[in-house]
Image (tube, rainbow, N blue to C red; front, side):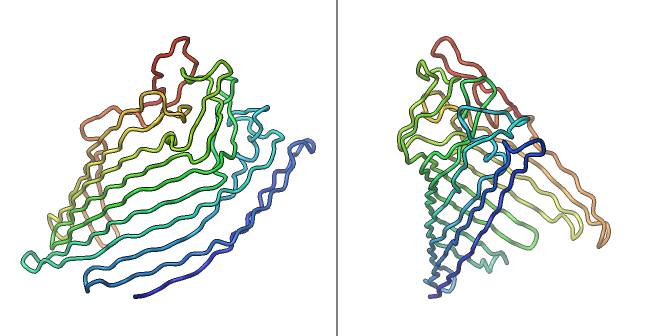
Length: 301
């Protein structure tokens, strides 16, 4: 059994200086001490269990501080307006899991693996909220949010092979009831508002991610490999109440190779998206539909 402990003190000073007057001038100071503690227990020489608790904070960015007034929404090009201050985001994380390795004498290889669970609770989380004015929005503290999930990893090393796999499940939800402006949402009320309840999922965070890959040493200098990536479905920005269809998941296959000409010179080649898959990585509605129909993605990869 072994224990670790520590802490970090963060101090951030964010100043905005108006070069034409004083309306935009502001001084924002954020301080916080973040503790952490952990423990590891060796169950066998090849398997150990771990658990830990940690805290972290994030100060609002100048963009967020300069665009935080719902009465004066903005776009990126003119975000510097006089705004109320925002609170810093504080995250508290608990995690636990198992990790280990297995030597394969017959194949002269080794398998390393890890399985863990975690929960991160954020207080005063910051969200970008669309305005009733098309194309404008603002940042605001939205209370408590939670991100919890499972992470699985494994890799196999042999003389010429490296094979790896990882899977992550993320359950990202609001923990505070909210009334948010989302005038483009077909389920918004007559004032352009949607109503978020605890347990609704945060937009633009896929629940599932899977990656599989392999690398092979053809010679000591020449290596080839590839990977498969799957990203699950996600809710649209502006649909924090989870009433519309989700943005579909997607998958891609990528290949790579490299040749070490000398100790200091290497050539390489990449093929990203081998099968030319067309997919969406982000979406939000651009105008409010007159009827209650599903909204469409506006940005594709």
